[in-house]
Length: 117
Image (tube, rainbow, N blue to C red; front, side, top):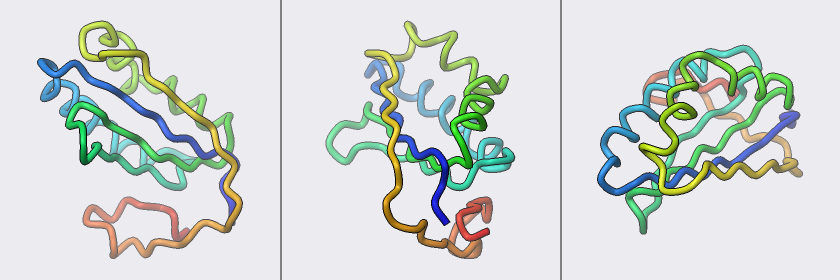
């Protein structure tokens, strides 16, 4: 299985707003993983820069990704961009060249990863 849409989203927070930004970004995880069309949604922070966050996402299609971005729980990051972010969110679209590696739900602490479906 290959997803129809893969993205990496890079978010650079203002150092003085790191905790508020981190708390906000963490609220996206559970509802996003439950969205129809979400195959994989992973959240990371840079090992070199604690204010650089990254989302690695696989979706059924660009259409469902657009629906995700329009979800009400995503809007606060858009509304608070100038307050929380050091620069605009940078999203790069990719095409996966190898089949998606399945992850067993029991391997994920909250059991919400759907990559193995």
